[in-house]
Image 1: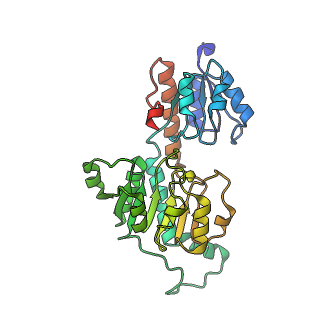
Image 2: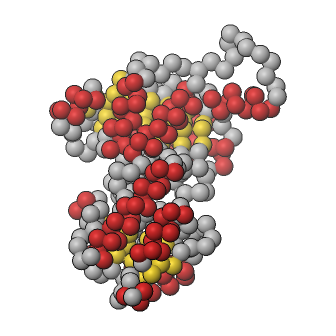
Image 3: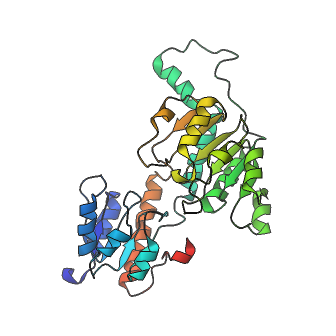
Length: 328
């Protein structure tokens, strides 16, 4: 009977096939507007639902979880990152948390390579010239960029996405270097021809391109702070397709404006949609609206994982993508 089905509240619009399948399986309340829920709407959602399906735009903190009703037993996040969810408090309240890992690694890696090429080859500047109608024809010294073959790529966070970036960059002839909290197994390093740097400072100082691919945690907040950014070579560039909080955005902006860093490609920002307005005026910066995982295939796969996590939970088993505090 429909009344026996789990009550599921979805906080954002999802692809139509995902919403349709959720409706077939559960007693689902979908979001009509493609905007984040207000705090009041989130409180109402956790008070009425058995399962909440949030996204990274929803702040599921201890205060919100504390106002949840007795029915809430699962937070099935639509996305891999869970830094917007207080997983520890959820666990203490007996609420499971799941996510959708591994889905967007290739999509995000594609975007990272796109940003590397866009910044080093000055693609947005060329596009602006063409759109303005001011192109005067080919010239030997106009819009000269840099060749990426032979450049050193330093990957900060060689997990699923970082490794996908490494494979793509190697195909372009880049040298692969990385820094992790823990060194990877030798067979992975050999496969990627990747050089490990125990000291992030030393790696940053020697790279031509830095790619941020680590999650946002308390230990990675402003990991690329003003002091560390100043270690970068003046002709180096930095790209970020991970989490904006990893970079001190104000410090980065100052250094880009001063020409102390050659360029940046950003798909994520420290304050979400509130992008530092000074970044918009810089020709050596490529800004994208968090498009790293924005493929039809990826978003459908994310939905499939959410549904599998909920269905497995409904069947009385642990969700396959359950997140516990020890994993963070």
